[in-house]
Image (cartoon, rainbow, N blue to C red; front, side):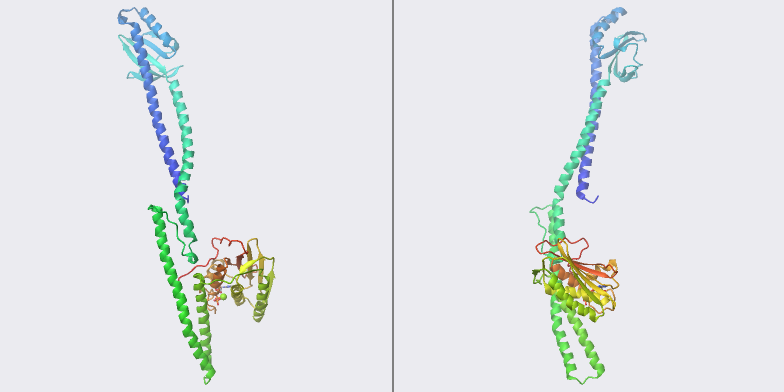
Length: 466
Ligand SMILES: Nc1ncnc2c1ncn2[C@@H]1O[C@H](COP(=O)(O)OP(=O)(O)OP(=O)(O)O)[C@@H](O)[C@H]1O
Ligand SMILES: [Mg+2]
């Protein structure tokens, strides 16, 4: 069972029901004892009545007179009591009419005992000595047993009711007790690299839960400050590196312009310039990523139907693709209003197209499809390249990830795409295309609608402090 609340409720219900059941069992035992003792007292008082009706001179009375006196006393009581009088030798001098032909079985040791009289059932009996006579007085246990059975049935019903009631109370209590934990969970779940300043609301008390919340808030403080440090470092390092790199490339260009280099030296300088350009691109991209994650980039949103934007992109894309011997197709379905920054979204589409063209063999095609769902604008770019194994499709959005080691790219393109789409409150993911290649899909919310809930494994902007 995964919920502590449900476990607590079960424990609570189990313990309280078991306690009640134990009390009922003890009550049953005590009540049973009490009933039996009452019957003993009843039998004893009946004996006292018989003795007083015989009078002090019972020893001198003839047996018939004794019989008569006992009969007179006991006929009245023979509804309730079973009475038998023996001479000590064993001859029965008297038996109450309700005994009929039945007789008491031999008495076990002790003055009070339980016995079964055939035809009558279980009785509680007492043996009393009256001079040379032994008097047995018994009372049926049937009513007592019935009372005990009713008691047991009522107890069983009460225990069942208790189980249900304590389960409901336990669940309500555990929900109330777990509420602060749920609040902590919800807030902690919202705190991400792009939302590091949010904190868990802490009640003004000093209990275990609020101490935990304070502890987590302290941890978030430390995390926020180290994330800020990393961001500042990346931004500053990128900035600082740009100036010397520009100087180096200026010097290299000057060397080329001035001439006087051997062809081998000229080629070496060209290589240097290319590598410097690559380094500059990486620095620009890193700078962009750290600024995007620090929320320092505010896209210039426009609310419009993206059809014209896509068509303008397609005309450039077609040329780029043709240059590589690859076909490009655009399909725009449906219409709707979307808030987006055309400059940044164009950058995303070019990054995706560049990747698709990098892997597309000549003669194949790349297809861009745009359509609308009730909540989102969805854009998918399919290629006919080798695709990416399912296990790697999420990883390629991480920084500096290149699946093929000798690729030219820096591995930052998709991280930037995810960042830009994140700034648009959208999601981006990789899927398998119908033809076996890769499909890159991004979805942006329709203007005026809340951002779609990201799927559990859906992409998000995450800061990796490399
Ligand atoms: N359409 C695709 N088909 C197959 N693999 C792809 C595709 N798109 C991306 N990848 C893989 O994902 C990796 C990361 O892509 P990403 O765009 O982030 O970096 P890059 O293209 O290597 O470099 P950059 O875009 O920064 O110049 C690529 O190196 C490639 O291995
Ligand atoms: Mg790329």
